[in-house]
Amino acid sequence: MAEPFIHLAGVRKVYRARRSEFLAVSEVTFDVAAGELVALVGPSGCGKTTLLKILAGLHPHDAGEVRIGSAAQPFDPSRDIGMVFQQPLLLKWRRVLDNVLLPAEILGLPVAASRERARDLLALVGLRDAEAKYPYELSGGMQQRAAIARALIHDPKLILMDEPFGALDALTREKMNLELLRIWQQARKTIVFVTHGISEAVFLGTRVVVLTAGPARMADNFLVELPHPRTLDMKTHERFGEYTRRIYRLLGLE
Amino acid sequence: MGANREALQRYSLAVLSHLALVAAWHFFVVVGKVPKFVMPSPLETLNALLVPNYRWLENIAVTGVEIFGGYVLAVVVGVGIALLFSWFRWLELAIMPLLVSLNMIPKVALGPLIIVWFKYGIGPNIMMAFAICFFPIVLTTARGLREVEPDLLDLVRTLKGSRWQVFTKIQLPGALPYIFSGMKVAAILAVAGAIVGEFLGSDRGLGYLMLQVQVTLDTAAMFMAVILITLLGGILYLMVLALERLFVVQDARLG
Image (cartoon, rainbow over all chains, first blue to last red):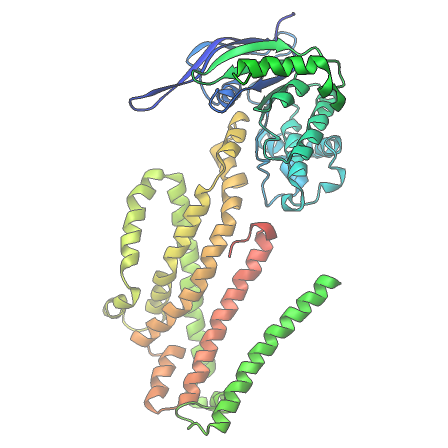
């Protein structure tokens, strides 16, 4: 592997309350090449969201090494991160287009070019006709599409997604998985995707990182060798089953 | 078209129920032969407007100024204080409990004191309207400014956005529905405040007029005064509703 885009080695994070300590993340070591889609999978309390916040620069880590960016892909933490959360968190009082533009406004990017780009992104996520609508006029899945477009507006190199489809119904979620893969392939971004859905992790990820809880630590890190573009019938492939069984075993479910 | 027809139906029903109330009132007075000094008919009430001595226009103007003045003052000061609270947390911790305690004082009980301090006039009544409607505005505005999604703050922080950007792009627009909800409550309270002020000590205004005509048992004029006060409150409330429609997206409006 050439110089990785993300390099994590022995990352550890402990939350300290007044007299108790809580180990949130430990023994996390993995590298990510530029353009990968990494799925972080694990049960509640395994530290996946914490790890995402460490990557976002929102939380400091206590030990280990966290390095993002490479000579080929320099990384500017103030404008190379796009975030998508479990809730779309669109601003109710802004039309969809203006919601997508929020990061561009905060960064002070040129207005006209940003609007142009926002329209392109809305087309990319399948919301071409929704730019003038308010969030409440959109379904949950459509709101999350807008949130993805918002995460892409400033053309960041790294997209961090925290269970972005966790609040959607099962069918919409399947559909959004396919959409995300399509968007990822067109936008050519490195994505770190947190989920507790085992099959979702295998289906989306070029790499899966398995985190376990109690104590929180990294249990596995492997490449998913399924061809791209992925299709739903791959979920019935033998190899897909092997990957999911491997994760089930690690999480003590088998 | 469908929506239009539905709206038309709703408005006509509302107008009808109001007219029905007036009709019932008229019927009750005429059929029941209720004496005029107990309850005047709608027409007799309207006739009270013809008594030039009562200086209706001037009294309406005075009460209107008191209500509007006290209300605008309360909105400006109330929202201002809540903004300071959200910028300086220690200020909120120190002052908010004090405001809660002060709000426990029945404002009406302050009336005699206000008269001692400020004498009669429009000024003290504006103060009364202000005092009675200022607190709900502080409370709802402060609440609205606190209600920011932590994840949205994270989003801005990853972009190294400033506190000012958080305030102008997320916090303040997010608080607007709360501010308007407080303003709607306050609009009704402001009317009560101004009238109480006039009852306690005044030489002008609709509340003052009511006390004057009470002595001569001109119940029709008292009815008319109550109706006009209600209309003043209604106009203020409608103005606030119109502003809310202008500034707050339908989905975000609070009751």
